[in-house]
Image (cartoon, rainbow, N blue to C red; front, side, top):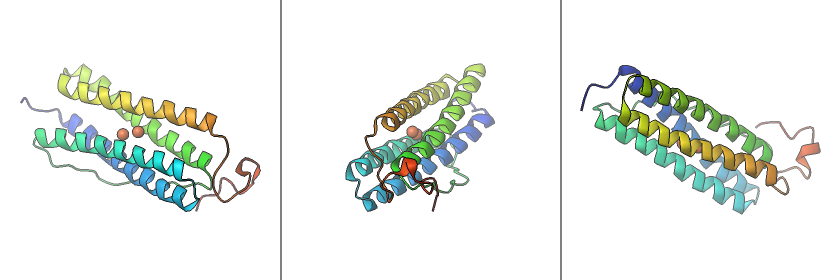
Length: 162
Ligand SMILES: [Fe+2]
Ligand SMILES: [Fe+2]
């Protein structure tokens, strides 16, 4: 195993922070959806939680293989919304942040010839792009909002977070 570029370790740490942020966010939103009685959406968010947890585990395994201790520096606070559409839009933003980070990681590891890291980040990028497409489709296809409001798209309080 050759020496890893210190910037790759930095990217791995930032990625772990974002993936664990995603775990916290999807897990919390699944619980919120249960509270709203939307069990189908809660189940989808729970599956998403597991996928993000697997990503975090992949990053931890790579860090350990490089002799580095996992170093997620901080989790972002969970972002909530008053309806399913609001949650999905929050998640689109988080997935986009992950995509930007992994796209940057792929470019950098290609540049320095770190093929192993490049393959890892490429696989993660593919997964997050898939998540983004799924979220966009879900947002477009959802038949009705769930949440406290009867018609959140027309409710002036629909975008209030709590
Ligand atoms: Fe992820
Ligand atoms: Fe994701």
